[in-house]
Length: 384
Length: 114
Image 1: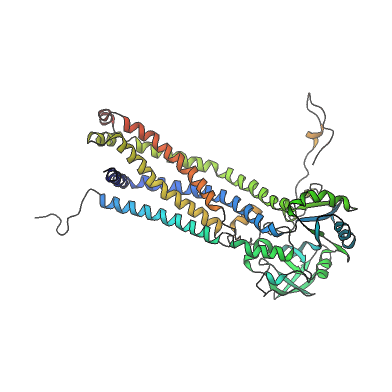
Image 2: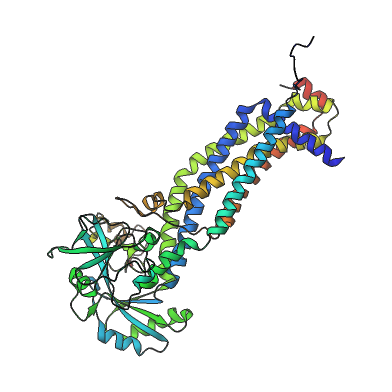
């Protein structure tokens, strides 16, 4: 009997929506837009920091860079490795040659890849190891007639033949990388033989990395800056949160305006006094009238919020989406397409959904309750 | 004689209401189902390729920001390096007089931390 009554009220609620379809359509559009905006901002900051953390989980545990009064300085490889190996807890030390260089297409990051770099694992065995005079480039670098011209500051430009291109799926790590033979990379970057840009250190226990950093600094005869893996990952989440929050602040007035519009529509609907008076005069119970208004609001809000969440999810997680790179990271030229990991996105979507639906249904429930508790005669006499 | 010959149709709009309710329900289920299916099926997959690249090239930073920007350095910009000299992001020199000249009733700032 109870189920039969609820089913009837559901149908009456749908019928009430059909009596004023433009109200429902406008409210639905507003809710969907607000939800999509909030979901996009929150999902984006969560997804970028989470994905960056997951990708960097296989990066070196510690990076040791030599510094001097002018900034970064090349580190002597033999002496540096010898001294780092004396620190208990260090597993391996690897010199890295890398740095920023200029091409006609803009700045790129040059990386020297020695024979021990497993490049074949990146492109499914199709990426050749760069020999001297040849380069492997990231997906964001276009080679002109198969040749790439790299120059650094006032040095003579050096030309390299492009031997391979890394797949688009690796763009988050390799978008503007130029991978060269280590001797070529050192020549481009102006690093003398026997020196490296920094030292990548692996440790026995990853948890000890932070504790080992001061010991490493003490073991080396130069001032150094040591960055742990956790610090490198935190760097991205901090930047994304800062810029994402600024974007969210800019959207705040629009969101508030839309929410006010929605609340006014809901209140207006709940105070249709004449209709409520008529229902009660015809024998509807207070609970039926309250349920009718609540279902009418829910029937508009739930599909709209779910559509807004789906739209926000699609915007952020569509594979290769490049708009977040432009918005958050300041790319001027063609921006890298992001392949963000949707792990954990459902929790964020649930939070956003609750954040919109609960206040909306609460705003609908209050006036509905007041209207349903009123005397039918009063409602009919004063009703609109 | 009937005004509208053929099958008699109800004018109480309950048929249309039933269709509306079913459409709203279907739309909700489809939107929620599509998002859940994608999130569960693709979880973890997009990071495999960049993770392999980071591991193979021993990278410690991602290509999320353009090359040469401070965020591309492992750990970000070193605080000792003045970003005014970064040719990718030139900035005017800040006016530090407000920091050096004490306001009424305050001690002078003896040390400036950057």
